[in-house]
Amino acid sequence: MMDYEKIREGVRLLLEGIGEDVDREGLRETPDRIARMCAEIYGGLYEDPGEHLKKQFTVERNDMVIEKDITFYSTCEHHLLPFYGKAHIGYIPDGKVAGLSKLARTVDGFARRPQIQEKMTRDIANALEKHLKPRGVIVMLEAEHTCMTMRGIKKPGSRTVTIVALGAFEDNMELQNRFLDMVRNA
Ligand code: ZN
Image (tube, rainbow, N blue to C red):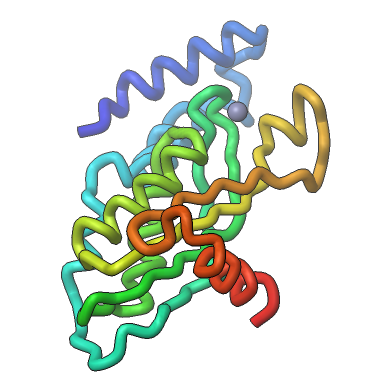
């Protein structure tokens, strides 16, 4: 469980550290506000997002399934600043598909934790592989990292793209390109 008192104390120390007056009106409730916000934006640490994939449907044909443009918000573990963007998921079923809204819920559960984008991409792909046991799965994340746009090298609009391809997608450029084509154009 989250230790809200520790979070409140930590935020107070941070504000003192930057030279702020923690007792001024605008900041007085900030430590508590942030503690409550942590429950939401880091709540994914306390769930197994793969659970959403246990609800499955049988299919006759194993055509590629693509769910694209799933909006997500996460936090970079190096700066505790947001990175956010779109997740695109493709998989080739092996007799079973997941409910479409469940893919979005899985992405959301993995997003709500401090991490790097590469790990989030891999976690989503691994969860699909584990629960759906598809013939192949590919996950692509495109995100803007505010630690790169509001500080540091300050390149607004630059996006970080990560891809993990497993099973039939691994080392199969033709399949990967078919997925990328659907994500970009369809
Ligand atoms: Zn960062």
